[in-house]
Length: 125
Image (tube, rainbow, N blue to C red; front, top):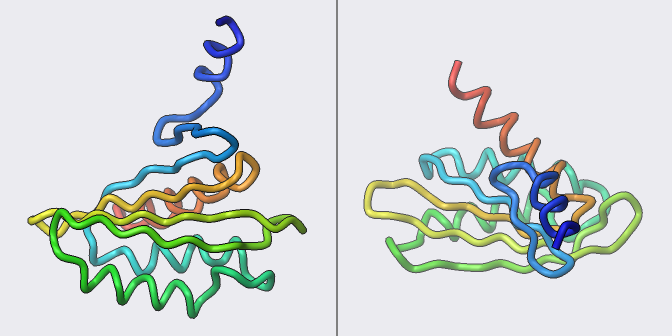
């Protein structure tokens, strides 16, 4: 019980743990989804699996999403020399806001969170 409490205290807001994967949750105006996807793709550049072309494809498919119809994409990526799973889940609402969640390894999740936050926080200036 104490171990579970300690783990929950070390996981930043917007990140949840599921088995051996960590989910990074985001919600923002859908017009920024392409840029956010490209920021995340930079983390896996050179290793294949989720790069610029995959980010472009997912972005186009997100643009075609209807409200309240979630979509999930699965990728095998290279992160720090290891092959890992990356899942992206998108859910559009009626107002053009998107919930865009990334599920990644515990090692990659903080970098994904930072990539998303860096872009979105930079837009607020």
